[in-house]
Image (tube, rainbow, N blue to C red; front, side, top):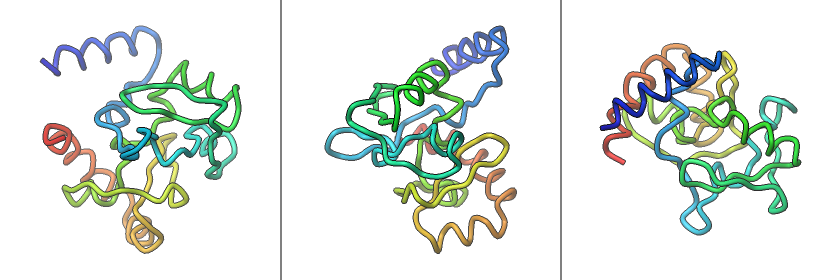
Length: 152
């Protein structure tokens, strides 16, 4: 059943002139209490401000089963218009862990934007590993993610 839905979403995105970002969609890594995505950090800030910024309780939205916080109304509105553009890849799970065919939590201050996609890592040491061979890890993670989604 997921395949027709994903195909429809891609068709809608393509007709709207958007590039599908299938790896941003899927189960979202969220806090146990409150269901916060990326520990309350603003996903738009990584692109607009080139740094992690904590979101505010005053600017939130619900998307893909999680609560997302933003530093400003403008950031919230940008996300609401095109969430797949700003949502972290692999549901906000550690990108390096996904490349290893697993999932792990993240430290939102350990991040990278590659080809206009946001990737998060578990901690500073994992990010060092990630950065050393980032492009290969991205390819491995993209291959592994669909199988991990089915397990969630």
